[in-house]
Image (cartoon, helix red, strand yellow):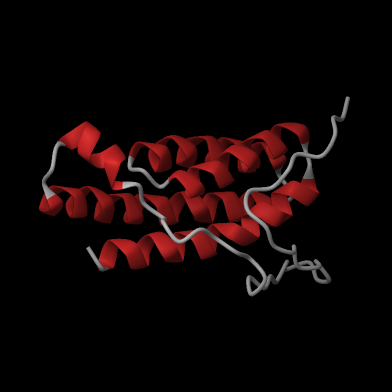
Amino acid sequence: MKKAPIQSAGTGKAAKDTTCSKTISVAAVEVSNIPIDERVLKKMFGDDPDFFKEILNDFIVHTQKTINEIKAGWRKHSAEEVEQAAHKLKSSAKSVGANELGDICIFLEAAGREEDWKTIEQNVLKLDVMMNEVERYIKNL
């Protein structure tokens, strides 16, 4: 039984899928201007900026792999793969204060469970944009 479509994180327009390769454009995708909530890190690890940067750099490496898993599931039209990879990324994103990235994953996980491809498409478009914001933020620490 299908439920009502799941709302997507943030705003933006999903690109039309006109090819099997699912080429996407992220120009219309908007993200917040605070990609990492440092309070989360301080609460968990204390106030050590060098340690934060080390944790966040490790996060970037592992996150790129998981984002690729989400995109692979999307390209293969495998809602289960999208759901599983989004679940994995959601937890790690929230644990380092990448809350908006974690929220995108919450929507992807739920949409994967419901096979809501419109919501999956909208939120897959946001992953790279948000991850770029996270990476930029970390590099400027």
